[in-house]
Image 1: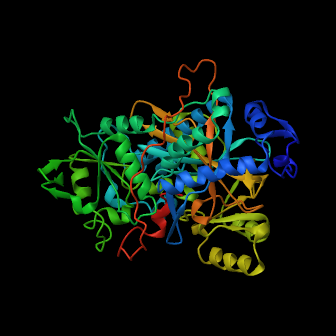
Image 2: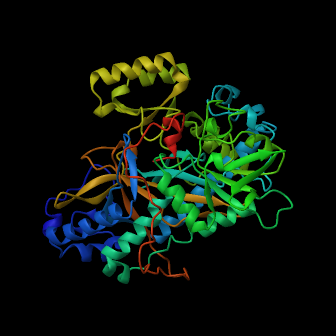
Amino acid sequence: MADLFEEYRLGPGWDEMFSELGVPRASYEALHETLQPLSSAELGVRAEVLARAFLDQGITFALKGVERPFPLDIVPRIIAAAEWRDVELGVAQRIRALEAFLADVYGPGHALADGIVPRRIIATSAHFLRAAAGINPPNGVRVHVAGVDLIRDEQGTFRVLEDNVRIPSGVSYVMENRRAMAQVLPEVFAATRIRPVESYPAMLLRALRAAAPAGISDPTVVVLSPGVYNSAYFEHALIAREMGVELVEGRDLIVVGNAVAMRTTAGEQRVDVIYRRIDDDYLDPVHFRADSIIGVAGLLNAARAGRVTIANAVGNGVADDKLLYTYVPDLIRYYLNEEPLLPNVDTYRLDDPGVLEHVLDHLDELVLKPVDGAGGAGIVIGSQAMRHEIDAVREKILKNPRGWIAQREVKLSMVPTLIGDRLRGRHVDLRPFAVNDGEKIWVLPGGLTRVALPEGALVVNSSQGGGSKDTWVLASPDDAVPFEVPDRPAEPAPLPTASRPDPGPGPSPAEEQQQQ
């Protein structure tokens, strides 16, 4: 084995490259053949080119208020065609059930009346918004874009870790990762049929146009951003440019007579669909936070009047609640009359006194998560926590059992990752992105693989210092469209490099579920 792998060890979880030490799985054979003869210096040069390309293009992420290059590891994550088919079907099934739930919970409430979900779960959810009740999307779609976070357990089974149907982010890195990787590992692309990802903007635009209010044949679509100081601004700008639509801020829009217009140099222009990247709390100061300076006054009234479509819909956060997550398998059975294709991670509901007692006795063996947490914030991994951390989370749980869930600690699957000058196993998750146009749910072939860079770490979120990998879905013999290597990376939207002033009232840490 080449020097790159000489210190590689199989970890406690599922190793995605090797079935046993030195024996690559079939999907990784071409990549392994490319990496094996390389010296650490040769791979290091390629990794440096990759990092420099991201820095030069301004592909960054804000960590603790500082812009830094988004770490992209040079070793991709590969998923076989048959495995991906299971993921596609499972993600689409989950989105259909969540769509049905959102229409129900903001409408007749059949699942609540039938006891599938206790009413107290909805009544105590911070993201159930009564102001959204009765707003019926033109084509029935509330989840235009979803990011469903998956992990592979110790047996290699894909499991759902959480659902993101508010403002899921990260797809820009999927596209940019692919463009960059095509330049540094061209020999692997030449030997492997990899499904493309560049069609995402077109699929998203199609779904947004399909969601236009009734009677609008040629809708105007915009991307609404909090502005340049938001950590995901690079993504907002990239998506708007790739779709060929305007990127706007709240100050660019006006609502008059329940009609939304965009201020332009040629005057006001009607807006029909808003792909918003602003959290509910800051979206409309009339209905939510009155101190918001990044939202649009009257926007919710315009949506209620059927004059504009907001994507994703206001109030979707009730389906992101991590306690509601535990009921999704039952919702699939209830609304779809199907068995879940993707299982959840084993999870405890702490609002049950008997379950609570058991969990409190085993805090050092479980993963504790606040139900409203985002970006890995607030998570306590019992086996890795200090005694004072265990005591602190115990106190928080006792004060508010509804605010927490506990999960079995899953040893996430591992993929070789360049650490220093050697390849070492690091834990990963996967966020597939789904787009719903009202007729079909399309799942982007790949998604964002996030990797925990510290040894043994299980929290992969970028906001906690994690990195990413390009995710390659191998094409099956029936796939008609082979991968095409981009000629060059797309020019990125410019990002500010000066120190970040206080922007005033803006997206809260909860919004940064935007969702790195």
